[in-house]
Length: 271
Image 1 (spheres, rainbow, N blue to C red):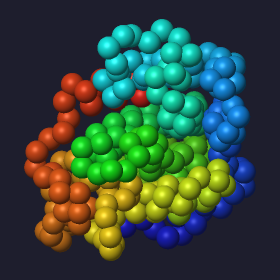
Image 2: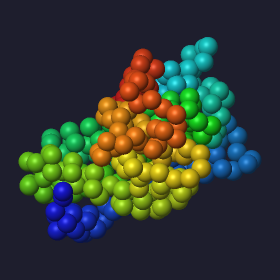
Image 3: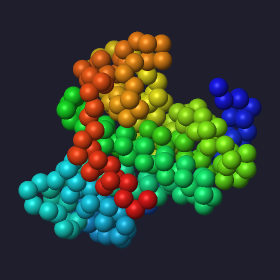
Image 4: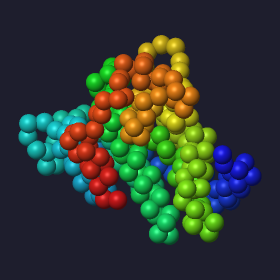
């Protein structure tokens, strides 16, 4: 159990440093804007992405991964957008560009950032697979939801660079991240003007008891992905995980295969 006073001290530090709401990278903002305009062309989106060579290269790499790969290898941005569509590509750009937020200098904190992103990449790949095979939900939204589920942990890890006590206590830092990321993450996705589904995801992602009426949603997908990644098959009190039951997913059967490994490598490249 994290000390409430320590939690508040971290929140105060985050506010003091002005990093409570990380800014979404420019390429993500502009690509979303282009994709939402009905008269935009493929070339309009190509022009935006081409201004960020790192994102362009990553986009081509992900488009050639097992998640999206077609018969022929993709070699350019125009091919990526033609094959996947502007909406899918714009969501992928948002997903990939969020990696730019995971930066740190101190060795221990940098390692924490890398681990945080790597886990998010794994959850994104699993969420994409689960959404595709067990639901009728948008698989690209599921991918983005998986990457964003822990975005609220970024400010916590960033301020840890200024707190020697946390630099020497990675377990305590992880507890703080897990405790604070739901409320901070909700504020971040609200500030980024993302649809409400992402707020639900960041609030509930680590709640294995999350249950609701109706069909499976993106929060269920991400919760099931996290359970799968951690090897969990039941809630802390020994009951079935509602999200997995709603999805009809047997968590005792691993979904991690070559496709998932390939997707994780593509999403993690460059870190």
